[in-house]
Image (cartoon, rainbow, N blue to C red; front, side, top):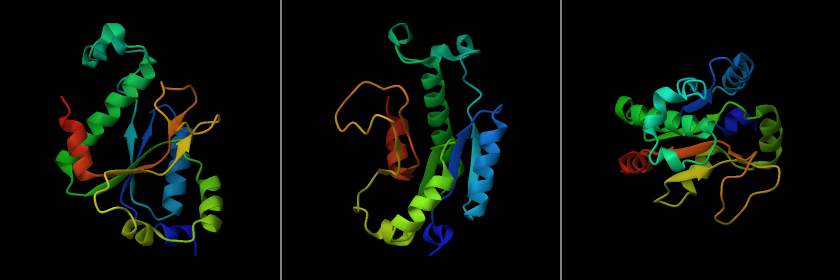
Length: 172
């Protein structure tokens, strides 16, 4: 079965991309189009290190904030997007990802190692699932314990349920 057949039924994908990164945007556009997946690009250029003075008031406890400014800007972008998604769609699920997913590698791996399709996977999730982390990137391995953020680690695609996003957005 072809990968695009295995992914039939996947919810709309939203990928996050800098306005200045045409190469990654074109890569994501080509790959998602080839897989017949509905998708949208979300800009990550609103909250940057260059304009941090304009948005640092959005950080709670900004005097003790220790992570790189880019992490904060990206997090604010994702939360704003999720809030907007809740208010503008009736969809029950979505997939979010960064613009660095290697679909060529994923296609080869999933094509031969995924012995199921999207519909089969969805029917096997627990009835009360909130989200599904579908990838994790860290050259040093995947830590299975609480830990501070590590350099060079990132999440891959994440499938989210509407009710979980509502809980996230309602956190005071």
